[in-house]
Image (cartoon, rainbow, N blue to C red; front, side):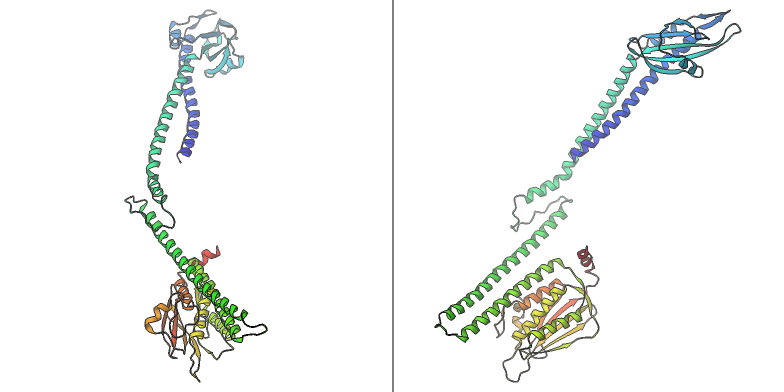
Length: 466
C-alpha cells in the first residue's frame, strides 16, 4: 500500500513539476519583460525631430533599469520610418515582419545572437511632423542569464517544497498504515503458533475493529472442530461395524470351506448370505448417512411436491418388500403439498424409517397383521409425516438413545442402528424435528416435522443456481 501510494505521489510530483517549470518560466519572463518594456519606452521618449532631422538622445535612466540584471548584455537598434538604421547594431536578428508587427503593440521574441540567448522587444513610435512622418522602431535585446537564474531559483524552491510535503505525507501515511494494520498483525501473531486441530480460542481484544473478526474466527474454529470430531467418530464407528461384519462373514466362509468335499452346508451358506446382506445394508446406510451430512452443510433446497415424493418412496417400499407379509397404508391428500427442501435427503430419511419399521415392526405372534401406516398432516407453517408400525415399539426411556448412530434398543437387535440417526440428521438439515412415540397400531410412531421454508431458503436456491 505504501509503495503504490509512493508511486502515485511520484506521478503527481512529475505532473506538478511540469506546471511549476511553466510557472517559473512565465514569472521570470514577465518580470524581465517589464524591464525591457520600461527601458524601450524611455529610449523612444528620447527620440525627437528637429527640422528634417531625427535626434536620438538615449536617456541614462533606460540603462539604469537594465542594470537590475548586471551580468546581462544589452543590444539595441533604432530604425527610421523607411527602415533605415539610425543607431545601434546593424546585424540584429529582427526581420521586417517583426518591425511591421510592432506597429500595433510591442512584440517579444527569443532569438540566438552572437552565440547567446537574447530576449528582444520591438516597439514603434509614430512621428507626425511635417518634415518627418512615419514610424520609428526600437529593437532592444537583453541576454537571459538573470531570468534563467530566477527561473531556476523559483523551480528549485517549489520542487523542494513539494518533495518535502510529499515526504511528510508518506511518513504520516506509513504511520497511519502501520496503526491501521496493527490489529491484523496482532491477529496474525495470535493465529500463527496455533494448529488448525487445536481447540484454542483467540483471546478477547479491546481493539474494536478486530473484535468481530476474532469472534467469527472462534465460531468458525469451533464449528470446524465439531464437524471434524463428528467425522472422526463416524469413521471410527463405521470402521468398527464394517470390520465386525467382515469378520463374521469370514468366519462363516472358513466354516463352509472346512466342510467335507462335495458337501454343501445349507446353514453355513444361509449364514453367509445373511452376513453379506447385513454388510451390504450397513455399507449403503453409511454412504447414505455421509450423503445426508454433506448435503446438510450445503442446504441446496428446491421446490418439491411432498405428496408425490411420499408416493414414490412407498411404491419402492412395496416393491422391495413384496415377498414379506407386511402391508402398507398411506393416508394423505390428493392435492400437491409444495415446500422447499432437499429431495434426496428426505427420500433417504423416509426409506430408512420405513426399512426400520419393516425390520423392527413385525411381530412373531400368529395371525398378527404386520401393518405400516404412513400419513401426512398439514399445519399452518409445517408438515408432519407419521410412520407407524404394529411391532413392539421402543420404551420411552430408550427413545433418545435410539436416535444415536449404531444404537440398538428394544428386543430386536437386527440392523445397523443407523436408520433413525439418518432420519434425525435429515430433520436437522431442514430445521425440523424427529420424535418417537407410541403408535395407535401398538408399535412405534416416528413423526418427522418439516417447516414449510418457502421464503427462508429462497436464498439457498438462487445461490445454488448461480
